[in-house]
Image (cartoon, rainbow, N blue to C red; front, side, top):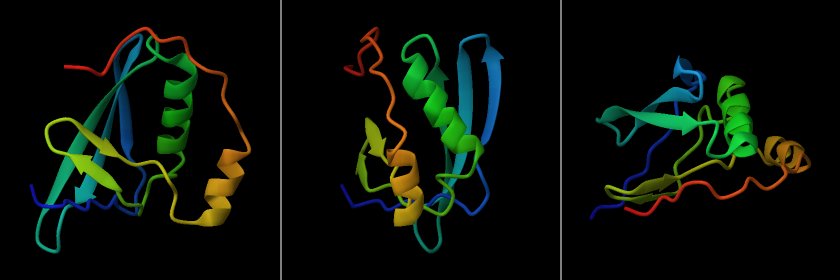
Amino acid sequence: APEMQCHCPAAAPKTSSFEWDTTFVKMLVQISDRERGEVILEVHDSWAPYASGRFLQLANTGFYAGNKFFKVEENFVAHFGINGDPTVSEAWGMRPLPEDPVKESNKR
């Protein structure tokens, strides 16, 4: 499969909740010079409350804006989450989270 490099836009992702424990985060991505798309992430707070809370906090503050997905496994997962500004990454890295208990698996 061709290597896909996606770029988050300059604007922060949009989040919305439909169930008490589920939030959907839509990120607009630049796949190539000519192709754009969107990724919708379904976040379940009850599956990992600490990690999901931090993810939503980062998404709503624009942490991912303008940053790249650094690895994409087609039809499975896209790895992202490192801010392109080392100062920003370092500031958030100084805020460790407690481990969430394993409640769900990402296996298919």
